[in-house]
Image 1 (cartoon, rainbow, N blue to C red):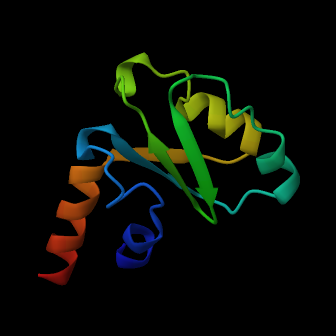
Image 2 (cartoon, helix red, strand yellow):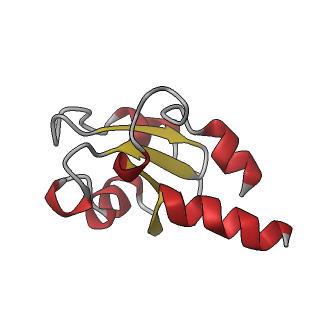
Length: 97
């Protein structure tokens, strides 16, 4: 979890924490499937795929984005689960005990 947190390209760059989300992927997607993703699918939302995580900046919130689990799962041929940034940080706290 700490490694995933350290890789978030949006964290600490002036993006509000409420806009940050992470999809954790079951598998590492192929470079070809990642390259085929449409970065303009849900403007102004942005995302970065890094290994088994997709980091999202959703300024209008999760409810309004077209960058859904179902879309990523179908395009990347895997299964994902989403967490907001506050939950990710809290999970790390719990893990570190």
